[in-house]
Amino acid sequence: MHSASGTAHLYHHRVSYGETDAMKVLYYAEYLHIFERARSAYIRERGLSYSAVEERGLYLPVREATCRYRTPARYDDLLEIRTVISELGRASLVFAYEVYNEAGTLITTGLTEHACVGPEGKPVRLPAWFAEICRGGKKQ
Image 1: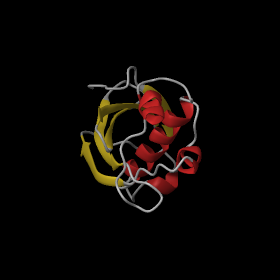
Image 2 (image 1 turned 30 degrees about the vertical axis):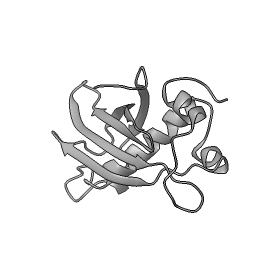
Image 3 (image 1 turned 60 degrees about the horizontal axis):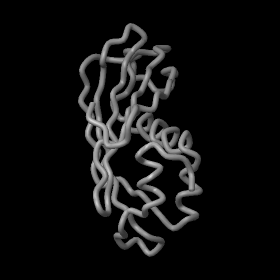
Image 4 (image 1 turned 45 degrees about the vertical axis):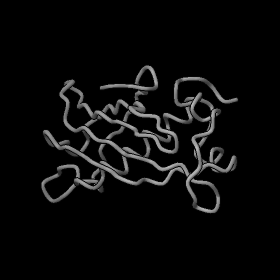
């Protein structure tokens, strides 16, 4: 997994019964929720919550999301989500995700592309303080 942000952040998630379908397979749309939790944990590990980022006037709406399902996750599986920032643009960034099961098998990969917008919803340049956090630095 290519990273513009240094080492991957590891996030663990246990699949709950309510996240599965009738066959006890993790419902496909739940991966996007897991990606959201993983990227929030990624930013929090670097010293800021998503709320604190927004309080500084930066919003990161998802412009595009992709997910490639390789093998199913099932009820009660413990998943490890490896998250990196694969691209830092002038007014956007891309998070990349790899999801592994307890056996170490890669089960899913995904990307979320985010626009950088200000409080009025208009595009803004990626602030230097946030770029530093994305590269692995701590809160400024």
